[in-house]
Length: 356
Image 1 (tube, one colour):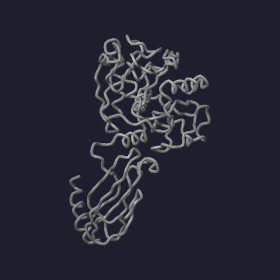
Image 2: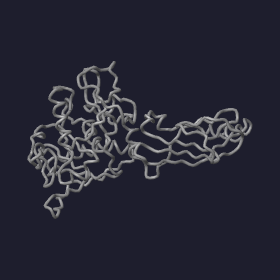
Image 3: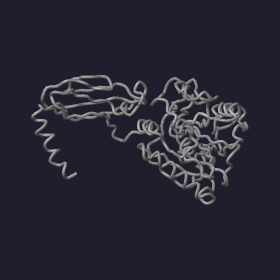
Image 4: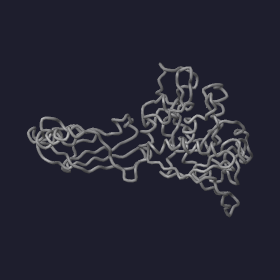
């Protein structure tokens, strides 16, 4: 969506939020709506694979950008399978991210098909008319179970550039919602010296995995402020990548840090959380830091700075993330006298330099 016709846009968003279950919109990278598995299945409803194969392949190619920055591997199923009919007559649709695109056999607007689908219904269970537009939207991970009755849970338009090429970042924006990301431009710490347009900035004051990011694919477009947001082809920003890296860690969760673990006795040991060094907002993203040397706790902050005598010290570093998952690292710190450092580190490296 563009940052234009804002009265209608924001009214539509409020109605959409109500229709999707009034998910609390903490306008930061994290939607407060959980995460998917690291291998979410993706399928396309209707005859999309035969009626619009190029667009389907383009969407698949676009979302691979997320695989390159985090432990996400999309399981592309192709066409969404027919639903299972439950004992109560409701449908159960497989596929974690079920995408509808325009110009296929499945209706793009109007009531979302599927027996037992609760989206866009009024209190009487009738269609409320709030999806009768061409705009895109996506469910959050928290909606997956309750919306299994719906044929699709992500509506993706063909919003395109001047050459007619659908915007990559528009696709990433909607799939980003499905992965648990929220709207960047609604944070209360946006840069008002950069932009004062209507709709820029919101009331959310928590859940920030990183600082405000004007380059995020989760940002709306504000052309008057030089912000392209989800109407570009740049792909995930540096901080989008960091947020997804934190939200979707590797199966073995390693506490990542930066710094040298082989040092001289004449210098301090200086180690710091790699998340923080890359720009994460550690007051939200991580907690319970612990740095131990030889089983003795030296620091409970995101960094460790200390002086040590010559010797080898077992190192343990651990912390938790904002979802309560634990991370750990075990290794060694080696502290050498200047003479030993030259002999064991500097000299061997110097002998290899001509080979590089």
